[in-house]
Image 1 (tube, rainbow, N blue to C red):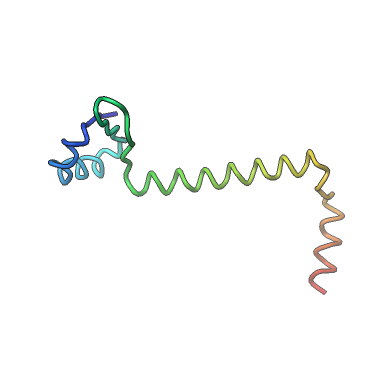
Image 2 (cartoon, rainbow, N blue to C red):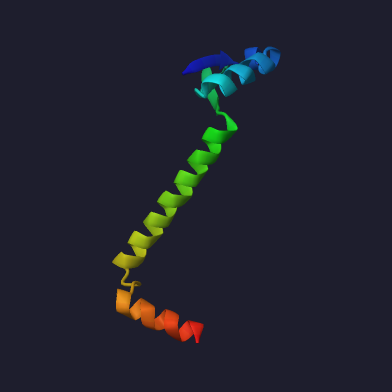
Length: 85
């Protein structure tokens, strides 16, 4: 992973974005020597968002199961059949 100062990013944004698109490796942006942000390409960001949504769905499902808010396969089929009628 590359690291750039925020001032370098301001001055060389086109070059840095071009390299980011080419190698798809995140860039750490620092401000006053302190990490301030990560810069990632659009495809990587969207893939991370998709993974996050999937993981959040899994967590919600696990919590529902632990709370007893789940149904057997047979029960779910019955509910769906009534709902479709």
